[in-house]
Image 1 (cartoon, rainbow, N blue to C red):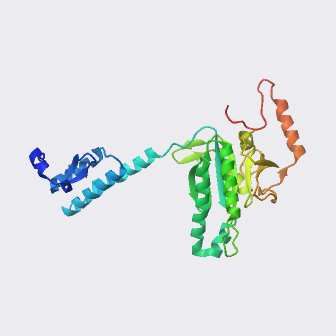
Image 2 (cartoon, rainbow, N blue to C red):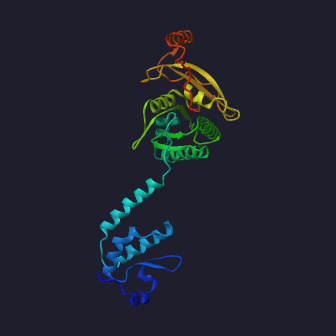
Image 3 (cartoon, rainbow, N blue to C red):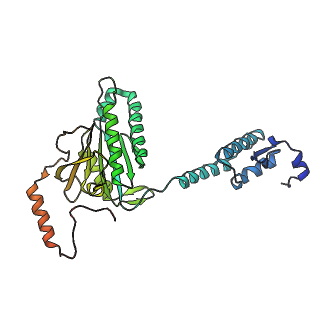
Length: 309
């Protein structure tokens, strides 16, 4: 394609260019078929002022391609790749190291689905909206939302507790109609999961999931690691009630569980849904003593996992 001469370029109207910036500089001429093909090839090399300007130029270029009966397959494929890269690059990196994992699901979701039928989708969207809003307000990041399950991560344990309490309060005050009772159970655990391209993996993730399964609708159950991570920085009005040690399915050791208590939250629940008996206090104390006796003084061992200083 021959280069567009300056004199001819100057005579072309603005509509003959896919992009005209705020200073009147004109880019990507589309005055004929050859120049449209060239503009399609060079589109990603242009520095646009903002995303809106890029989108306007893209639409003009596609309209020009349609006018000259050009099928811009390569251009569309390149745009999809560019948009995917842009979305990935602009997404803040997930936190690593010692983090707090938040998992929830809707209690008796199958029963709700059977009662509501096609209307269940609207209810699910409402609950997810509440979860997302509370997580964002507390500074957390959504990781995944699948069926009635919701997974988020927080850099600080106190923020995760704050989000969970806000969610339970809002759900408790919501009138759903049709005699429906919509309750969410929440499990929170702090640890060091491994962050991969597929998301977080590791025992910490499984522990958070087991805590969620152990909770009842309206209840927030946290691990000893999260209780220790919160320490003295618990949000105002938050208390922790010990639920004792319990063996959770698939985990090697019994876990000390705590229920989060706060104004506006239900207080009394049945025993955790572990499917097994809790570890008797005396047995747990004896086990702890045996472990401590096997440790040399200089090694030191804390009963609760501690967050990094």
